[in-house]
Length: 289
Image 1: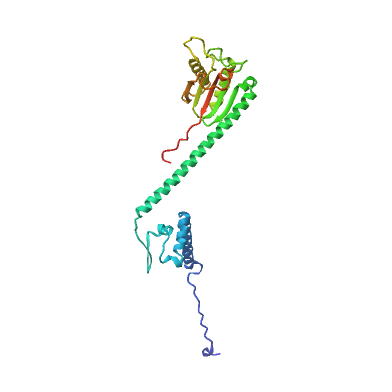
Image 2: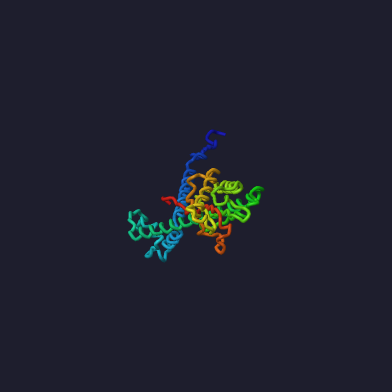
């Protein structure tokens, strides 16, 4: 075959620029980042607005109401924007004095509510501490072989003033030697035991001494007033030596026979007693709350 009859073959190589390393993925990635940014902006907007403001936004963008009426909730968020034919542009607007006053009142109401809740929580916790301590003290006296014989002479209750512990006399067993402020050894051990338990609480303590209505001694200058005060101080000294800090004592008072335990029988020995009151403290709130 001659050279003129040979077929001419033309090879065309199709080049694909970039291949796997082209730039198309960058466009997709940019779209993804933009969508994520819009998503996080939406989450931030939902988290930083109240329910009222969300409802206002919803009503604002409703076609039937968006053109004329802007609810108060939407106005708070959109007060810094103005809508033009070309889109949304930023605008600086100052809040009205009425709005500032209303917001301040709302904050004060919320702060007052928080303060009340905190006071209630502190009061409830203190009440629980008193009740737990009263039960624990009763059980500890019952479990102590030496003190259990005096358990019927110890009255423990929780009042509106605090946790009250009364150690009373009986016909056959007195706390103090007759007409003196000298404690018997078993009474001193009981007050020591009470002090060890009461010392676990941070509250202040009041101690009152009481006598019966029988006069101290005829024609004596030393009366039931002095006797009840001295007995209250004797109980304070025992508690102080048992580890109760001196600044815990709020008052030491002698009441003589003015507050009998048995008003119908003021001459009964049960009226002679020592009252130890763990004072209920008023809640103290931080000044910057």
